[in-house]
Every structure is written in C-alpha cells, then in structure tokens.
Length: 606
Image (cartoon, rainbow, N blue to C red):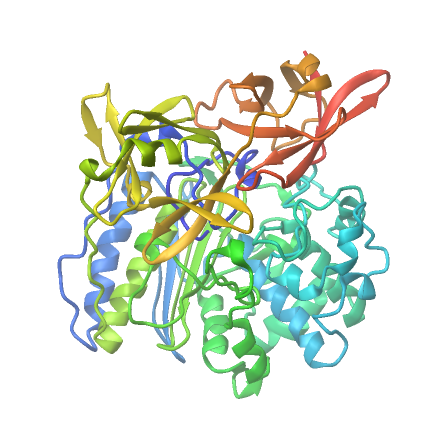
C-alpha cells in the first residue's frame, strides 16, 4: 500500500479502499498507537552492519508491540544481497523460526510478475499494450460502451476504470478459476471512465492473466514459471491458489492466533507464494536492466518502461506516478529525499502481509514479508526504515526530519472557513466540514475533529479527547488539506511529503432518495462466504444522503460506511473520492423478494 497508516483491517471492507489513499477510523486514532523509536545513530558509508543492527532492534520492537509471530527481510545492493534473514516464528505451535527461505503469500506483489509476463509477450510481438483488451479477449464485453476503449496499458496502470473486486467468491476453500473475471466484469458497468483516474483493480489483473494464458499457449501458472520464475532461479516460488504445501510455508495467523488462509480466485492479482531470498532475484533482475544469471529475462527498454511514469497527463492523479505496474510516488514518512524515484508495491491476502521498495537510480531494494493480518504497518515501517538507512550507508544520503507545521489559527478568516464548509464524499465516507465563525470542524465517522489553519497555509486535523487534551493523529496529522478547483470539480486535496493526493469531492445538494427511502433499514447477507460471515448492513439516511453502514457484532474495528448515490430506482453508486463515480449497488428480485446486490453479495432486508 502507498500509505499504511490508520486503516480498516477488515477482510470484508478492505476492497472499498484504494491502495494509495488514507482510510480513516476514529477508533484506530483513539487507540493511541505510539510510533516506533526513531533512529538515533548516524550510519557511516559502507557500514552495513550498523544498518542491520538498528533494523533488528526495530523488528524486535514491532513484532512485540503488534504481536506479529514472524517476519522475514532481505536487503539488496545491486547484484549483492547484503542481508536476508527471518525473525520470530513461522510456526508458533512447533516453534519453527522464520528464515530467509520461509514462504509467504505475496499478495499484490504478484501483480508485478503478471505485469512482467504481459510485457514478455509484448516483447515477442504477440501483444501491443496500447490496443484494446477486446482485441485479445473478444469475450470481454462489459455492460458499458466505454469499456471498448480500455487498453492493456490502462489495466496495467489501474486506469481502466474497472470495478476493484468481485468479493463474493474471491476467497474460498475451493475458488473458481480466475478466468471467471471476464464474465464477472461483463455484468457490471465501469466504476469510472477509462483514463480518468487511478482506480485499483484486482479483477483487472485477473483479466491480464487470461490474456497471458491465451497468448502464451499454456496455463497461466506454467507460463509464469517458464518465463519468469525459472529464469530468475526462484525455485521455491510458484503461483498457487492457496498456501504452499511446502514445509517452508509460514503458518497464517489472525494476530497471534492460528487461522485459516483460504484459497484465492484472482491468482494473477495475488497468488504468488515466495520467500524473501527468492524475491532478491527479482529485485536484482530489475536493477540489472532485465538480466539474471547472465541471461535476459526482460529487455532493458521494458525494464525502463516499468519504472517510467505512465500517467503524467491524468489531472486527477495529482502527480501520483504509476509505472508498469510499479507505484512510483510516496507520501509523508514514506518519502525518501535525494534518491530519485521510489518504486514500490505492497501485498496483502487475508493473513499475510508484504512490502517491497526499490530505488532504481541507487540500485537498492528491500522486501519484507510477515504471517499475520496485524502486520500491515509493520512490514511497511521496517521496509522504509531499512531502505533509508541502507541509502545512507551506500551513498551518504541522509533524510532530514520535517517538522509538522505549527498551527496558525489567527490566519483563518470566517470567509475562508465558510469557503471550506460543505459535505464531501471521501474514502472514509461522508465528511462534513462545518464552519462556526472563524472555526472549522470536520464531522466524520461519528466524531468531530477540529480543522485548523497551519503556518504553511494548508489545513490540518486536530483531535482533543473530551475536548481538552489533543492527541497525536500520527501520519494522518501530517496531511495538509486544501480545496482545489480542477476538472470542473471542487476537490479536497491532501498533501504530505511534497506529494498531493485526492481525498474527496464536495457534494451538491443531497439527491432525492425516491424509492431508496423505502429500503432504509437493516440487512443481512443472504449468500455469505468466508469473507462476509457475520457482517450486517444498515441502510440509513445521513444528513439527507444515503449511506450503508457495515458492522460486525464481534469485531468493533471492522466497521465502515459507504456513501451511496441513487441514480435510478434500482441502481446506486458507492462513492469514494468522486461525487459521480463508483461501483454499482443494484436492486434485484430473487424469488419474489427484493435484495440489494454489491460485489457479488446479495443483501436481504431483515
């Protein structure tokens, strides 16, 4: 993920949120998670031992604080592996230590391999990534005329406007084949117009998997092995629906409790089983212009394109760069100064977490993998801190700590507060900015936060427990907010570490609810699966807008809200950062009874 900060851990809600924006829960804010101890030593050039010493302290602290059983890490300097080691346990019950050869589910890091496979076929002249997907998969015919223009490049860069997931059936004991994604996508309109904005899609990479399978002349898994894994010497790695049967496979944990890791339908999007030792070979290949073991796995021009921004002309991306399919921009504490582009990708399945960062100009890379669903922030913090210190040891480039701008409440005028006031659709649901004279407040997630002017002219969020004692909002507190007119929209923009990000859009007057008003009330999922069991949905009117609150009676942190925009009596859009785009919620009739349908789930009124 681009920012691993305050976020929903919910396996059922995770698909609602993009990988490059902040998702907020005030419950998480109030948990008061302290930051890890900062670096206190200066690393001399060439002193790799001090890098390892410091990071080992950080790893021990992170594993203990967040109760993560095991973690493995590898640090690469060009063609040299500086360090590859495991910490904690791969199997708690049997006291099996994690090592550099421990296998983990790589999650969305798998997309880098699927993208590379598409590009190998392009190198062979079998594909042109600027041609429409339908050229190669005639069966791809979504219920949206705009889909005819979607190119392979847009899918690779998450700019196709496709729905993010079809969650029902995504994780099962025996999932269907990923090729089903074509049919699933054909049933749905696009979430956004192609090319409008970055919109993450797992289904899009399952679509690419079908392209690979069709034009390689063999099964997807076989081609991935022949074209990439075997040439790279990644002998322990494989694309598999579920955890490997190898004794080196780390057990899966919910926190520190042994848990089930179900199999995954969308194999090309997240089905790689691998170790950090094997992943060093992929990193080394990317740093060697596509060569591994003296042989070309990818052409130099292909590797250069993978690291090159593909979306410079997309205004709503706010300068957030995407490669093929590397992410190339970072935010806040994840930014690295003076090192050139920072290429990265994270991975998450139900129970496994991973994070990889690469500095192409500095020829440094790091991969961190863990076996607990509580390790999202852990793998990110360990990876980025390792890379920063390794950069200092290799090139002498140090990172300066930027102080959070001081509050300047006197600079906020009543006119300015009134200008910011309004209702916004955001990734955290409906947010109301409310002006009271020269003061501004944000009503969100059932809490009220102060919105204060900062010395840099931006706005920041401040929260005081019982209205008295301010608490540190962590990375969320580093984000500066502004209102920007762009593309005919009034956008809420966040800024951190020199990078802007789209946070939301100001809404107009609430649309008439029409027939949806008669559907307010409590719903249960009538076709539950492993992901959705126990979740309940309440359709409600919130300040004139339609919202869906998702809750779990036993998981207080696994709650969230979707803002819905009715566009007909039988269809609504689940809004996120834009006021006119999102995945569809349908009204369907099943056996004479009205249901709501979203992401494959059917919801029946209680």
